Length: 209
Image 1 (cartoon, one colour):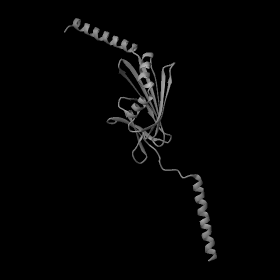
Image 2: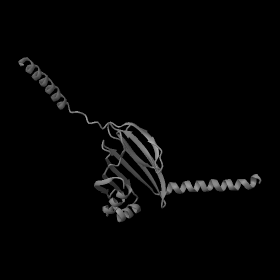
Image 3: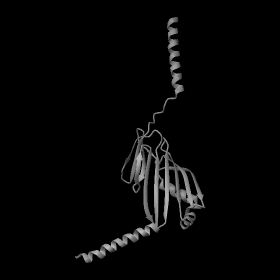
Image 4: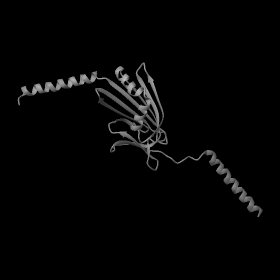
């Protein structure tokens, strides 16, 4: 095959790539930001915010925005491993922006020995992760729309040895918590006083005898 026949193919591929990139630039985009703030029990406060163009906002309102019960049902399906409550939905009609807030109990699974596990969808790419702060992102093309998703995970104060583990159905963030209850200072001081009094009473009893 000579270079003259190869050249048109390369030109076609280059033109197709350029057209594809131009089409993606003109596609509507939607940003979804999710923040998961975990406490020492493995419960999480979740905040999900997203913004639409005019046409997408009208469709979303018709399907979900004006029917928060359907949105809650879908969230319960997506977070089936947790108990969902305290759900609230705020809508900004002017800027076509919505924020959903909820609490997911036992979203971080407890194993044993103070170890907790948080499942992360396989399609989410780890951007940064250190200690108690983890960020994942993903971009997908759905029905002619580019969806940019960011997940921000905040581990509880006191989380130790946090690390990322690629898994089977899900990747995972694994961390340790010290679950040994701290003894209140007041009880400790009371115990010392009782010990001293007990010793004193024993000493007096011995002297009397």
